[in-house]
Structure formats: structure tokens, C-alpha cells
Amino acid sequence: MDKYLFIDRDGTLIAEPSDEQVDSLEKLEFEPMVINALQALIRNGYRIVMVSNQDGLGTPSFPTESYEKPQNFMLKLFRAHGIEFSDILVCPHFPADSCECRKPKTGLVLKYLQRTDWDRKRSFVIGDRETDMKLAENMGIGGIRYSRESNGWERIAEQLTHLPRTATVERDTKETRIKISVDLDHSGNSSISTGIGFFDHMLDQIATHGGISLQVKTDGDLQVDEHHSVEDTGIALGEAIREALGDKRGIRRFGFVCVMDEVEAKIEGFPKSVLEKNIDCAMDISGRPYCNFICDANFMRDHVGEFPAEMVPHFFRSLSEAMGLTLHMSVTEGNTHHQIEALFKGFGRALRDAISIEGSELPSSKGVL
Image (cartoon, rainbow, N blue to C red; front, side, top):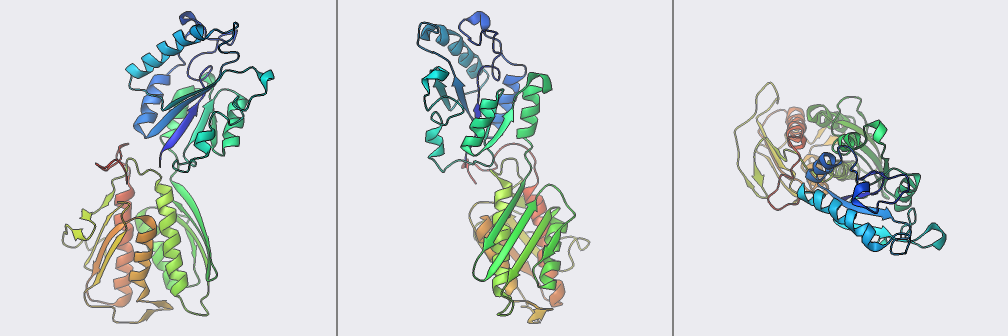
């Protein structure tokens, strides 16, 4: 989904003169580093929208032509540097007019609030006034206060191009109550409790070898059996990873080898120092869920501890569906404990590779993942 920056004009994009009216070219002054910052933000997938109060625009105190000359020059200069605004929203009213479009009211942005096709978690209002922060609150998105004195646009660009890749998902059904938090950029300090000891150990393998942090709390109907707890934990974990990845810009996307839906370009094995068994695990964070699971010799035991071996492929299929992941996994014969552990370790290692950041582009010729 698209992520938006709703940006104030006077005092944020350009300097605000003492009379609070940019009505001539002589008064037009760009804020420091604004061009470099906007270029970086656009490269990182942000759409930018200008949202501005212009008191009395079109009245004798602020004729339209006086507004348009510096406005058009500003837009032309931005455009020359590859900066295009998706929308320009202006309230022309005085405060005493009590209109519905003057910030912090939401009349100007109402059409965005009525849409569901943009990412509210990763969209922000940027402005220099408290009214801008109140607009962010009224829109239900984050607000970033601009200040030239606190490194202004440099700070904002750094902050918005390095957003934390974290997410928390709660799943509450008649069979399970689950809360999972993931942090894709920090490892250690994981806490996992599903009521199934061996399953806890396996999820910890994903966290450890994936270089991520997991907080998992699953309360399921274990008095019935383990099926619902394992399945729903896989679904919630897939949803959490997908949410934490955001728009997926800059990720490597592929883990170990290239896969394309049901077709796998396969390489042989992995270093024995990394994985205990002869295992292949290949993934593509494609947005197209597909899971191909092969256990050449089948599992020789029905359970490892309280964990049913038959739930291993079901867990990875549930996770793949929820995450939008193309996943190919295979393991050869051996001790069932080692087979299962190798699969979870292999998944973690492939995930570490696929979610690693190597740029700012979206790794897809389609323009969407």
C-alpha cells in the first residue's frame, strides 16, 4: 500500500515571513535541505501531499495572483529536482470563517480518510505548528514536528527512511488466544510460550537463525490437541512478519535460491556448520503464497515431546499463506528431532537473507510485492 506524507508549506517547505504571507518572489525562501530530503523520501516510496492554510486567499488582502507567482515558481523548482506532489490541498479561509477545511480540521484530507488503500502506520503529517500535529491526531496517523533548529529535514529524512520494522499481531478465536510481536532488525531477548515445549524451542530457532526478536504468547485448547495452537501461531507469525516488512522496499527478497511459485531453481545442500541435516530451504517474499514441503524419508516418529511431527508442514503452510510467501522446503532421512530442527533453522537462515536490506528500491519489475 502507498505511504503518504502530508506536508505543511509555510514554515516547513519554505520559510514563513514575519507577516505570514508569501505573496512575492522576494519572500520565497526554501527551508534548508528540503530538496535533498524530499528526493530521498520519494526514492523510499513516499507520496507527498501539500496541505496548507492560506488565510484569505482570493480576497483583497491576499489576491490569487500574488499567491500563484511564488507558488508556481516553488513547484517548478521542486519539479526540476524530480519532486512531484501527488496533491496540493489549500484552505483559503480565515479562522473566523469556521470552515471544515482549515487545519487541524480534516476537510482538506477527507478523501484520503475515506480510502483504505494507503498505509496509515507508515504515513505522517509534517509541519511546524501544533495545528499540524493536531491534524495528524485527527487523521489517526503519526505527526512529525519540523524545526530548522533541530536539523529539520535532515533529521526527518533519516527518521523516515529508517523506520523500525516491528509489528504486533493479536489473534483471538474460540480455540486460541495469541499475541506475537516481531522485530526484524534486532536479535535476542525473545520470549516464547505456546504451551508446547518443543514448539517453543523450534520458534526460538527461527528467531536465533533469522536474526530477529520474537515475543510469542499462545493460549490454546491443548486439552483437545496441539493442532489449533500450532496452526494459529503460524498464521499470526506470518501476519506479523508481513506487517513488519511494510512496503518491502530495499529487501533482498530471496532466501538462498530463486524460486518462482511452483518452480524451484535448486542448489545442493548447505554448509554442515549451519545446518545439521541435508536440507533445502528456498523462499521468495513474493506476495504470492505457495508452500512446497518434501520430507524424502518421512518422519520416523509421530511426536517429538508433545509436538506432532505432522504439524511441521502445516505450520509452514499456514505461515506462508499469512505472510504471502513462496516457500520450498525439503529434508532427507534421519533422526526426527534433527529433521524438524533443521527445517526450522533452515527457514530462519533463509528468512535472515530474504529480509536483509540492500537498498531502497522495490525488488520487483511489477512495482508491487
